[in-house]
Amino acid sequence: MTTQQLINQIQKKKSFLCIGLDVDLNKIPQHLLTEEDPIFSFNKAIIDATHHLCVAYKPNTAFYEAYGLKGWKALEKTINYLNQNHPEIFTIADAKRGDIGNTSSMYAKAFFEDLAFDSITVAPYMGKDSVEPFLAFKNKHTILLALTSNAGAFDFQTKTLGSQELYKEVIKVSKTYKNSENLMYVVGATKAEYLADIRQLIPNQFLLVPGVGAQGGSLQEVCKYGMNSNVGLLINSSRGVIYASDKKDFAIAAAAKARELQQEMEIQLKLIV
Amino acid sequence: MTTQQLINQIQKKKSFLCIGLDVDLNKIPQHLLTEEDPIFSFNKAIIDATHHLCVAYKPNTAFYEAYGLKGWKALEKTINYLNQNHPEIFTIADAKRGDIGNTSSMYAKAFFEDLAFDSITVAPYMGKDSVEPFLAFKNKHTILLALTSNAGAFDFQTKTLGSQELYKEVIKVSKTYKNSENLMYVVGATKAEYLADIRQLIPNQFLLVPGVGAQGGSLQEVCKYGMNSNVGLLINSSRGVIYASDKKDFAIAAAAKARELQQEMEIQLKLIV
Image 1 (cartoon, each protein chain N blue to C red):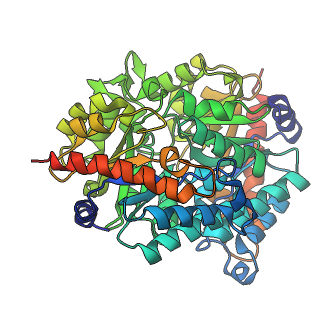
Image 2: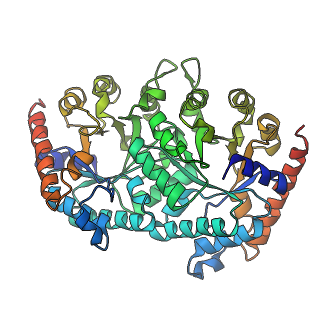
Image 3: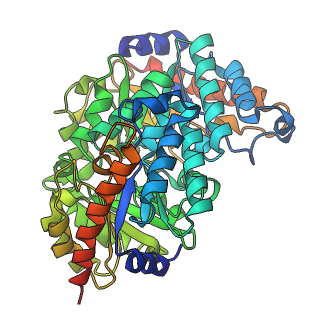
């Protein structure tokens, strides 16, 4: 998917919501556990109920790997269902991969070719040759961790490396990578006040912003500091949407929560000059 | 597995060799491709031929994920085969995972419980709460990326963060994490000269050292600067061992190459005072 197609979709749906499909069998409605594939059944119901309110889905691979073969199969079925039924929706493999060159190429093949995701999250610690194999794919997007939403972000990311904080150095250096136009960045909503600085470095790139909702980030703050003329934001909510109810009405409850976020986003979109 | 059990095994086998099971269907002997599960058949033959010469096996998950469900199944079969037939061998999931706390817990469950690996490699960028969920498992080991073997290591890892290089800061800060006694570290053989400094910071921890062989690192240099009185090293070779031949004699050729490395290691072990 091209970035322009993503922007078009945002304008059409008046939403820049990404829904995180982090399926935990201990949290989904118990009546689904008797289904053949409870994880996929849950995802399908959530997607059917919310696809008109969001522009992206983001399964975090940890939640699938935790269930072994069954989990990986559910991930395959979920991405196939999205690509077949909602090809306009941007898909993100939240995998946080990154390894030496020939190994990163295998990950890129796994997520961009076999599973056919539009994008993947990548960890920057191993540098250039760990990121560039992902960037080599045309119309695929590599979402680099810059400033994450968790407390541990203060361990290294916000410490000064040379003349500036590590997360800024990551952004600066990554802009020199080959095909860097395929980069997006993860910036946590819990650190919205950093977004103004980040926009100085990357005014145009899309940012994937987790941490609104369960983690305490504010949608308004993120938009205030992070939005650009093409919106430039994908704001993720996982637990807040998909676990809005653990009863039989879970999909309706998820849609209601997604609608709420979409309406807040519609207001923010009107503020773009 | 306890660290002492690993040390005992090293002393018994006179080897601190780790064999990387990075299976690429384009590189394995072509006659295996007609087998039902070529990846597992390859691994089983390599394990059967080399298990007396090495103390650890390290499948890199990228090479399994690249083949989707079939790949994940082959990974499961490989770790089960190892745990059933060679429970004394240390197993490493080279997965380079790391995410916010509740998500890292899912990865820890996937690799320590379901797949029952003894250890996993973890990326440090997201800090404390991304690493501690792995450390919480008793007699399991978390191998943190410190200084990797690839060129991209110079992008961030060797740059100065505060008063010292990022990789040193990672080591220093990680020592304050809860259950940090379960930490080991990745240090690339291509950067052997850094090992003396690293041993100042962590004299006792085990280091997993990739990059000997195909990537150009030297076994002698690594031992010179990195070995401690308990050996403290696991030196990995992947391509150099498993692809020693692409003919029907591949397992014999892999054993010959592993034997060569084991004999070099035996000489180094005699140098420990």
